[in-house]
Image (cartoon, one colour):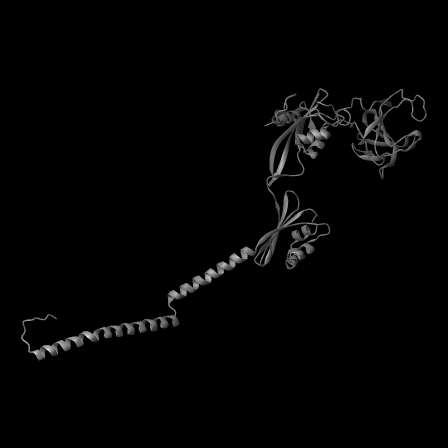
Length: 443
C-alpha cells in the first residue's frame, strides 16, 4: 500500500490511522509461527504413519538385510573349514583317527563305499591323511594309496562319494656320470645317483665286472635314465636305466636297454650282444675272497699240497647262496671234507659245486630244475672248513676251471629284423652317452 502525504486528514484521523497501522504490524509474526507449528505436527504424524505401514521401498531394504545375513553365514562356514594333515601311527585305524577329529559319524557312510572301505582298512603307518573339516564335519579326505594313486572321498550334500585317482606322472630324461675316487657307491652318490640306480648299474654289468674285486681308482661310469615325477617330486624308484657305460681298467663296456615285440626286456651291447651270460660270476654276497683257485695250494688243516679247485668266499653263516646258472640239481647232501654240498648240472657240459653249507633251501631235491640267481642253500662251516665261507667250483666237461677267469658263454644275441629294430630305437639314447674320457652331462 502506498501512502501519499498530500491527503488532507484531521489530527484525530491521523492518530487513529497510526494506531490501526501499528496493530496490523504486530499480529502477523504470530500467525506465521502458528502455521509453521501446524506443519511440523503434520510431518511428525506422517512419519509415524509411514513407520506403521511399510512401503514397497522398506521391503527392498529388508530383503537386502536378509541377503547380507545369509552371505555372512556362508563366510562363517568358510572360516570354519580347514585342512588338517595326520601322519598315521603304528596301531592306527580309520575308527581311531575319525574319533580323534570327532568325525566318527561319517565313517558309517564311508564304509558303505566298497573302494573306501577296502582302502582305509589297509592304511600304512608313515603315510599322511589329508582332511578338510567344516561345520558339517568331514568335507574331503585324501589318502595316498601309492606314489601315483590317491583315494579321494568327497561330501556331496548329505552323502559321500569315493574314487581312486591316478596322479599325472611327468617323465624326465636325465643323465649322470662320474669317476671312481673312493668306491662306486660313494662316488655315484656324489654324482647324484640314487641307491636304486646304483644297484641297476651293478646288475647290468655284473656279468663282465666283479664290483667287489675289479673296481679301480680312475674307473668311469655314465648312465642315461628316466626319472618320474608327481607334483614336481621325484618318485622313490628311479629309472629304468636306458643306456650305461662303464670304463673298468681301460676296458669299455656299453649296454643299451631294449624291449622286443614280445615284451621281453634286456640289455645289449651296441652290436646286439646280450649283457647276460649263461653264468653269473659270484654266487654269494661276500666280505672277501679268503682263498683263490690254486692247483698247488698247501691245505690249511692237512698241511699237505692239495690243489684248491675253487674259490672261497668269506661270508657270515646264513648268507644266501644262489645258483650261478640255469640247470638241474645233480646232488644235494654230505660229501667228506665238503660238508653239506650242492652240485648243479648245466647245459653244454658245465657244472657248479657249492660246499661247506649250513643248510639247504627248504624243498631242494635231486632232479629239481633251478634258475640262475635262485637261492639253493646258505653259507656255513661244515666239513673241513676253518671258518664260515662258501667254497665254489666251476667245471667244464668234468675239468676244474678258475671261476674268476673262465670265459663264460653268452646268452643269445639279437639277429635279423630284431637287431635292425634295436639299433633304430636305441640310436638316440646311445648318442646321449659321453665318449670315453668326456664326462660332460648329456643334454
